Length: 36
Image (cartoon, rainbow, N blue to C red):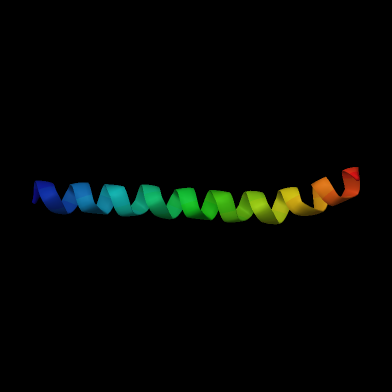
């Protein structure tokens, strides 16, 4: 049981991290282009 919880926690944190970096790229790219 403990291992399953650990795997789920790792998976969800990886998913959140990937989603955050994807979102950051989508948001930051037009912003950086506007700056130039």
